[in-house]
Length: 212
Ligand code: 3PG
Image 1 (cartoon, rainbow, N blue to C red):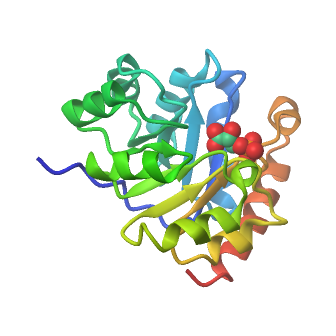
Image 2 (image 1 turned 60 degrees about the vertical axis):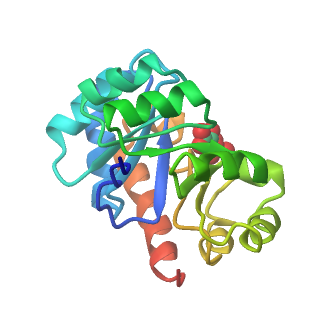
């Protein structure tokens, strides 16, 4: 059985968000959308994560909500029930990938080495999260993987910011890139949605100006 595809978002920049309070979720997602970003990774790193996914999925039409930091098989059903359109993980275990397949959740497994990428590919996944991208060696690592793994596309995250985003997005094997710089905790806490919109606008302008 083939794996379900990711939803049709346009943005090549993926905000990776830790929501401290569910009340932040909807205005933050609206600000990102206003800034030109139609996809978001809401992580399960905070206790508000699932409720935030649910709130954005229900209240922000046009925003494609992914659940991030899905590390356990038991979380797959939870994020689907919350309304996530897809999931992402910093890694991949056989149990996690089996649950994703059984439940039909479109999924981006995480990898940090060629062997992990090959295992994910053999399990049927061709878009993989490269994590932690900058710490692993940044664009040089992704360039090196392009030779032996030409069928794979990556979403690097970890250590990405406006300063190096374009370098990542210019690589032919990079489909999109993500990071937490778009939604700083202080801005979320202060309800500074204009700041979030501005960060989104800068990143999406840069992404749009960078050929795939
Ligand atoms: C992730 O899970 O993708 C990363 O924690 C994001 O890393 P960053 O905070 O360095 O952007």
